[in-house]
Length: 119
Image (tube, rainbow, N blue to C red; front, side):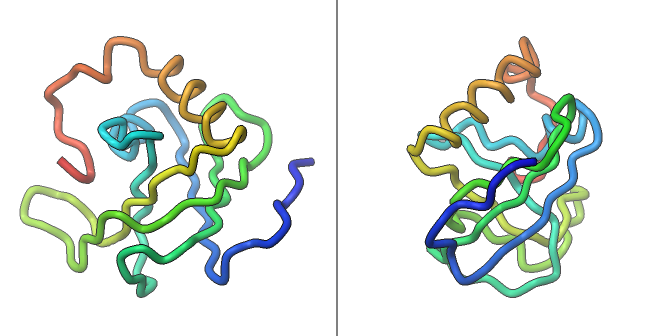
């Protein structure tokens, strides 16, 4: 079972991404270390540190990532983007490994012009 990191941030968010299309819509590859958009009604501020428990396709257990809020959709948009937050991965070993794993799961899709939850 995955271990929860020490010195966890004050906020935690669980994110379940069931398949590759949902992962594509959630992944924020334009960030330096990558990140994920998490639909949520919880209140966050820019820069908040968040422990993300991410359940990703093709992984058997959640991955615990130290993230920070870099994007906020305060309400659903007319283009179908849900209310939620964009969470940037850190540069720690686990985050680097998850970024690489996500990009390996989405070959070719990263250059797609299909809409995502953030752009």
